[in-house]
Image (tube, rainbow, N blue to C red):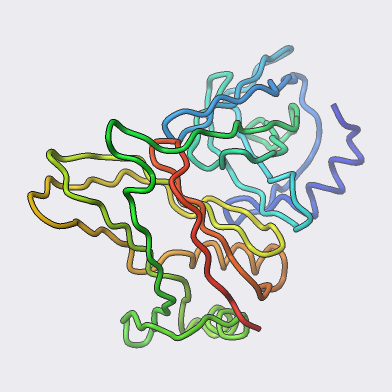
Length: 264
């Protein structure tokens, strides 16, 4: 367990969780030892720990990416009365620092863990190469409440949109599925990553593809990436120009990496 002074300085500066700052940092009577072994299955990671001393009424669990040169956002994984938590907010092949606190935000333990790398998607005859992904850079105009295609994204416009509360920017994310003999559902996870390594799960949800006799079926999100850009800007203080990557996983297996560019 780290010393109180080190945790205090780090957490007071970095622990922005669910739009709220942890109000106090101290050690409680109880403590936890977080396992470095994390399981990942079906798009969900499970973090577990053992407890000693007086157990709190519940545990709050937070995590921050720990394998990049970029500053990272602190995310709340949830609250539980058990000695483990299951979450879709952790990305495969990524190292995190996990914190467990009591309901008063007293830190009970912290540990660096690694979410396992995953296999490439395959489900019977369906493979990752069967799914075709396309992107369209877009903005959502808050005054007209309409989506609009833009030729390119720029950091200046994204930041201006946030600060003036006039527009949100991101991409239309489209998945094309080949002919299916029966309805199929998959748990789809999108992980966004910036040129300097700011990484966050943007979307994790069930998606159902209907049975199609002829041709293809296409499913899309009109705009995704807005929450990611918001967290990036509020954490790093800028929107770095360069190439961004969207990592997609189905049922916890890697499907594809798609890129788009953001100018200055």
